[in-house]
Length: 243
Ligand code: FPP
Image 1 (spheres, rainbow, N blue to C red):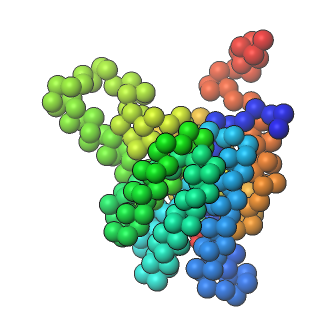
Image 2 (cartoon, rainbow, N blue to C red):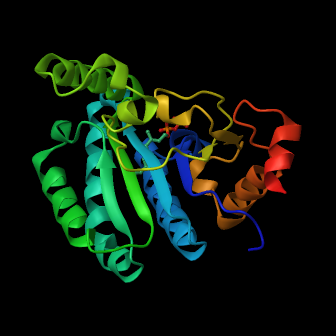
């Protein structure tokens, strides 16, 4: 691909429920089709050599869904991790998580631990699953930890720079997303990465998540390439830096 690739793509995978409703199927069937789309996008990012992919798989607010749907999603997550481990290893994918992992059922936590541990040797795509994740909680937790460090005398208030603060977030060590994709036409952040998306380019598609294909990812990357990222500077300044 003769294009500048984003280093970090983040995705809000929305529309599984609508995909199922369009087919008179139960919502969980939409989530199952959503898992197939996850498999596709992970393979595509591996193929395109994207260094970081972060997927919003379950928000803290999603716990409020009917218990049967939450339970079904946990089963799907567990199955995906178990079934996919060999492929993740073959494709050199390193799995990590952000979010309140302690909130997840014990069996899912164990499966996650196994896959995270085994895939830690890989140095290809960094796949991060946001599970029981809330952008506001991420920031609040970081604020509490920063306050504790200041209280202990390990940090002075003057030394709290943006990079210092970033290192207290769940995404410590990851570059901020360059491109945020949201499917199913909704134009909101839904408490996903908040601090981290300060300069992220958005791409919203009407496609429902289970219908998201390689061509859609390529289109998102094409649109990303057509944008001029100015980071608060003028066009002239940016063009001057290019030459
Ligand atoms: C949003 O669709 C999707 C979710 C809340 C869950 C996303 C989960 C998956 C794609 C499957 C499990 C993930 C992995 C990583 C194996 P929605 O149900 O809100 O759709 P709707 O807005 O049309 O109702």
